[in-house]
Amino acid sequence: MFPKEDKAVLKELGKQVAEIASRTIMTEKKKLWLDHNILRKTRPIVLCDPENGWNEIITDDKIKCKNSVARHWEDFLRKLIFWGNEMNDDFVVMPHFKLPYVYQEIPWGVAGTKKKQTEKKAVTDGGAYHIETVLEDYSQIKDITKPELHVDYETTERLLSIAHEIFDGILEVKLNTVWFWSDGLTDDFVFLRGMEKFMFDFYDQPEAVHQVMELLYKSTMERLDFLEANNLLCLNNNDTYVGSGGIGFIDTLPQESFNGRVRTKDMWGLAESQVTVGVSPDMFGEFIFPYQKKYMERFGLACYGCCEPMDGRIDLLKTVSNLRRVSVSTWANKQIMAEKLKQDYIYSMKPSPSHLAVPVMDQEFVRSEIKEALRITKDNCVELIMKDNHTLGNNPDNLKNWVRIVREEIDSM
Image (tube, rainbow, N blue to C red; front, side):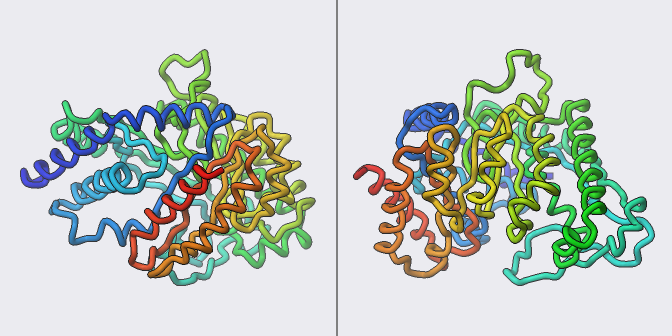
């Protein structure tokens, strides 16, 4: 039950979002992404996602609602308003309120184990954690239990009704759940086996690694079949964040055969394997990539990579027929990636967020870094994605100054 005061707060914020979305600049930014995503030459695109840094921008004392769900919605709307009024990047504010399905997910497990599986989530206090091995021996492969997805349709409909009551006539309310963000398979493997054992297994038990990878791959395909069959997928050829950075606007999706029921081939998909950063390109090509490639090509367009440097794997990845966006992390060789990607793929550059994690950002150092990166990628289809921020040094101006510097350097090219 939302108090009437909460509804009034949300309605007013919704009006502010609608006003921002109506600005001509948002239409221009959308056109920029549409051109960029089909590899048409544009100026470099800039997107700044504060991620965990939002906690230092939209602080608890700024949230006025009392109901816990209403507070979550208020936080979402305030983020859009900040993005539209203060960030000055190429994020597109749309006149939409997207509501995800309410659901519960039971992860991979091993039947019969007495060990409690490590919960797969980010550690919010910034500390480290140890992954408990639940697949202690490969004789237990037969005991591996597949993940389960339980959708709470009743609660979803109740929340949808409340959203319509508040936002109808202001914002378009739509169900939109990003079920399929990343499925590199290897994260799930590590949460079963533990990182250290996983790394030794490539050498000590190669056949068992293939068995588990095949199991993970088949289960992923079954999950996608389930989402398709139950009409739970949503198009992401719009203002949805796709890959590990970038906005999904594109007019070549969905497919011409689209009839209203979303299929994976109507969508962008993502794969990555950050946990295998210490694995050689040959081992990656033998044990990981063949399984990833098969489900990546199930999608309309594919994105690959996140924080792992891709320069040692890019030739292999380019065999994916629908590859479009490739992450170039701060640890990658930018020159090699520029030469390999050319204008044939989106060069999704991820500048280091560490420069923004201090109270006073070294603006001249940031400027020199950006200037060099733009020089290297001048012939590429490039986007600069600031992400993976865990703190802004309690100085949100770091974000705005970073965007300003990038824009100034783009303008001076």
